[in-house]
Length: 368
Image (cartoon, rainbow, N blue to C red):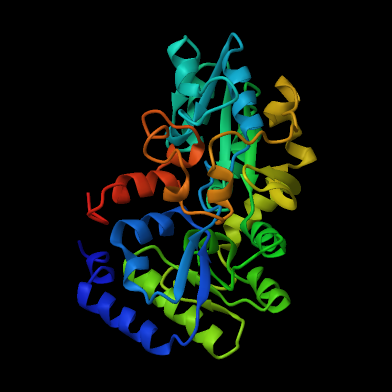
């Protein structure tokens, strides 16, 4: 496929791997904070091309996966309310709440609809003025502009039957939280290219300076990731720590300023709970006071803030990069995509789902 296959050339991948091997003189540990990168690493066996001194660990890069269970429970409560239509992305349907998930709620008769854009949820609100239409807005900075625009448009049209349940999170505060965790072993980051298309990468520069870690904004194809690793290891070997932009075909330092403008108009920065990470100050977005009337929590009650219960599922440790998915005792046996114990086995961007799809068999990575 034009514009994609050139980033998957085996000869170029081997050349990058050899170049990384030549410059590597000691062990280094890097983390990617992007579910798309995680899937590419596992699918194409990128980590297996690297010298044994380099360890790639997977961070909280799946937006569905880091959505707290309390928000899933609130979505279930809202969906069970008579006269409500709950709209959400397909990945959210099977994310387990405390007792159930949205797919089961829909099977019991709740009006839960899969949409591909928040603007589709707006259309539902226009078509059904007698119903309360709630959009479950989750994601990193990548989804925030479209979610903000839906609220902005609802306000302009006077769609009083539309609201959003907001669980938007921000990546830079999560990187800080990871670096400040006891026992942190991360020495460099591959930053998510799609997030940086919106935000740019200026926010990452103080992190690189303060914690003395290189951060390379990286794309999602195999050669993108290998180049990102090469750049990161080059800095580490030379004792440097700065932000570099590997994904220059899509990312500029200022980012998308029009998208940032609509985000700043509709949202404000708030503290957020992250599944597997706990509370992180200034790590999320909530509706600003001017748009509070469109907040589902104002209409249906606030989301509870309970301490996360840790059971058999080790998804929290996976999200923190403390273990690989296949190091969880339940992986592939008691926990599968058909019967998931945790959210990282549900989402397409979840690390456990990627390992199950591409690495559960001894033959290694496949290209299904």
